[in-house]
Image 1 (cartoon, rainbow, N blue to C red):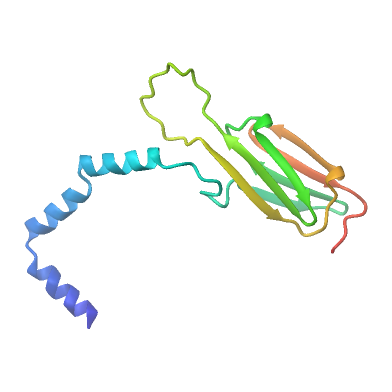
Image 2: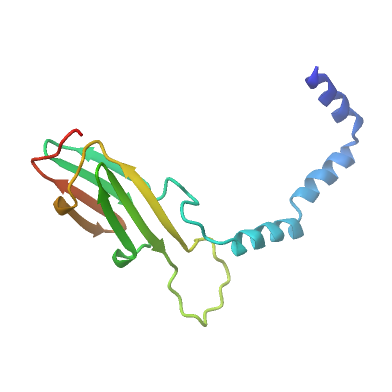
Length: 148
């Protein structure tokens, strides 16, 4: 029933009406407004709840997490272990001279926070972290990894 009403409406519109509609959607002023809104919006923590992306591996007495953090400096990342969760916080900033004239900016400066549930209770004292080529490698090594 709804399909028939849509077909009737669609057939009643002229081709020029449809062309005008689609042209208006993608016209330059509209797209400029969209880009201005995105650029002016505040950068909110957890705007992307799955950032940073992570892989987790478990060995006999070791838990390893790999976080993709391209463009993030080591000093801009903070880790906190609590029970069976790992919290990663940080900020991703474009570091340019203030007098630079920005011609195009697609990469966003923002803060992030993500809580990663871990399969076992971990001890923060057993945490080792290294940063290599934009990948943060976090390892918990302990013979006392427990299932609680």
